Image 1 (cartoon, rainbow, N blue to C red):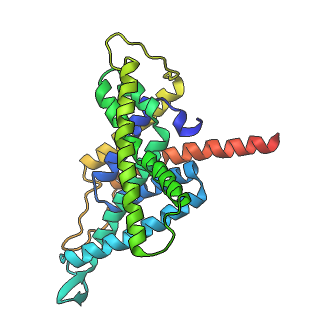
Image 2: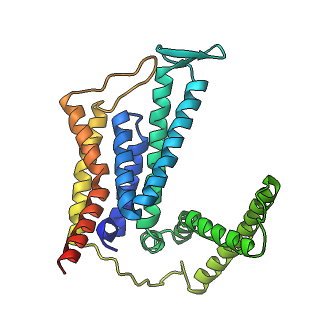
Length: 293
């Protein structure tokens, strides 16, 4: 793997922890926007335009739903747009719902990129020696969603070949979904037992067991770690000085334009766009040299 995924697993893990912390630690709109842009850019270079476009429409739907729900159930704010069932729908509650949905979508997008870049072997390399049982459980949990999706598709296709889902009736679809869920639940339990037995047979977690690994901490990993530390220090200093303080009630606060805030905004954008920039540079370089051959 080239691009951002070619860095040392420790560097990747530290970056993802910091990216998730910065995405969730504040409700500042620019911070949420930076997280969304960085995660979407990285996701686009990893998965291509078509899959990114479908994910974009899903995110737009989530924005609308969450913003609407928050505006209907939270009536704080001084700017009343209209009344619904004698309850005020305020602009502040609507904006808060949009920013909340942006933060949630960006976290989901980072997790999707995480499952592609920080694979099971990298995760076990990091935690297999220190906390082997926890490392195995977490690695199985992280890979469970893509495995569930793949296995669910296989089960559904197998049932279609057996003559199920013959009609478009709601009862038929509900019964088919229940059969898929039942088969998927049985498969997941068997798969977990088989994985545990296989790892136990290989001596996983035993004292003195050696592990072969291709991962080596190189100079480029140290440089990336230094860049991450620099941006983290700048962003942390901006947080400490109040550059990312923001509120929505009773009215939406104005965006700060102090030098400290501007430096913090630039730092968080550059930090969260870093994986997409690295991945994009590798992809463009590969296509450039390919065209020269």
